[in-house]
Figure 1: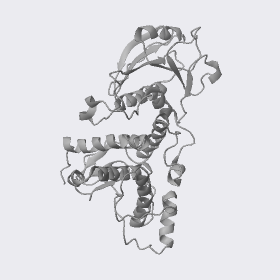
Figure 2: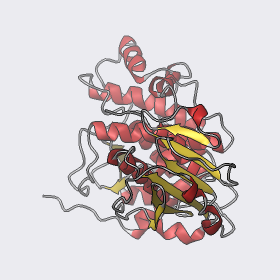
Figure 3: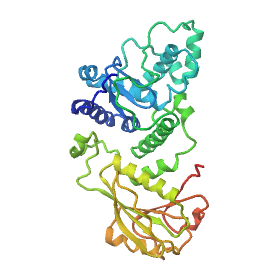
Length: 379
């Protein structure tokens, strides 16, 4: 059995450098790279993906010019994000790979990065879906699968890759759907329109959700300054996280959870877990958690890896005690998970407020201030 390669500091620097450079080009693409798991493997020629992770040959990557490396990594991440491995089905593998490469190379070029010198380009075909391009290539008489084109869409992980962390199958697809939604949200905050910089590509139109899901909206509200191309915080370079320079000013959030009995444990886990995901991606965001019914229980400091504290409460619902804590904590944002049936403060607070409401909660117009975000019923 082949011994798995270890992720070395040199390999982490290669990946982190690419993420930083891409942030200066596109918030959309940079966010996709942030959600990708890169692992070393000598069994790939340069790089490849099985639809879940991106495998990179560390020796080859170290020799590439930086812009070529950036284009290579983005190429593979786009294959994964667009589910090119899972969508192949029974189709001929090499011709499918060529069709997918043609589309992805057009996107990489749109990002201002180089594509392989022998790669095929077609301004019409690269705007279509991969299924349409596959059929067009077949119609051109290239059905034997021979000729130019790589073989970077893998049937499974290389034997020298580290074990997977649990994502597989539908889980990986859901991961990339959420990554695309968050990329659109981050792109909107950086000055885009919230759709993506490649709206003309049918591939992305095909996979685009009708609207951002609640998780993407939460990220947009909580990590409100995730892209500022004026600089980055060097304290996080060693962790592979390149962040905007924030002049040593963290963003603080107060998270309140209604434990009056009207919010179920699944909704609590979903919200707190997603907040922890934001904390892991953006360490400048700090969060404090309270449970509340007619009085607050806490505070609990939330971290990306902390266990969710055991809920306390179970009485009636009064929102006023939590809002009375605003002066003490001075948060930048307040997020309150509740069905909305309770006593509100008489006056709107000075803090930006997001009400997160599970199915069956109070209608939007019933909240006297703040924004309302509705959890989706995923059952």
